[in-house]
Length: 369
Picture (cartoon, rainbow, N blue to C red):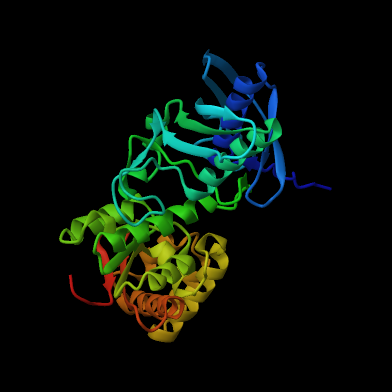
């Protein structure tokens, strides 16, 4: 008997920043470094986060850092060192008055340069959720000590600029480092929260940049071929959606794009033609069986259908289909348009483009270039 390992949850960069801030503030007010700190998540729950380093810089300033733990989620920022330099401002007040938390971005935290994101251009890429958590962490400490004070927290990420090169931040207009993210504070294994957030942010930035057409690809190769074809579209219009077929088209509709181009390779095209919302979930035998049925429907060639059904992959099946049976590819392309239109709704014009694996276009449902 085999047992499935229970995947371990982790915490976000926003949670790490809040924990680092709290650790530094506790050092300033208590005079000693804590081994760990208790942070309130955006769900209302609490989590204990180990403190990695904590140093007092002067009478009013301290810096602590936390090692981000993404659990079993494949995360670029897993094991990254997230720090906060905290400085006390104003005078202590025993009662009355109010506290203020001023959050800024230091080394390794990106800066927003394009409109369309939750944070306006010119500000550090620290999202509203993490800002709320940092503020709450500061207020918890001040309330424990019965004081009000202005507190400055500068968030930093060791090697953040290097990590950012492995993300799509530059496409979103986030330059110089990573984003501090988190909608709940917890990273759920294989939840794809970060990828989903990137797709939504990318489409928001594209709309803010004035694009009326979203060109959706599934990865770097299909995007590169599409950029070569549609050179007159702004860079922001090209959005990599991975396997998130339905979610991406729903987001296109929410942002009121007039048109969406779906430009994909044949293997992914077959899954989209089946109307599968998240295409990674589709199994090859199922997709090839349906592809074989479509081939039989449009060609009446039983031998062709049998070859397709027995193929190892969609790429293998395409060798049987082209060049003699282009109508099979046309059936796939038209089904993509139908599936995508169902997800996006009637107000978005859908155009489907299918690439062969060498980048040659083997189907184009038409439209303006």
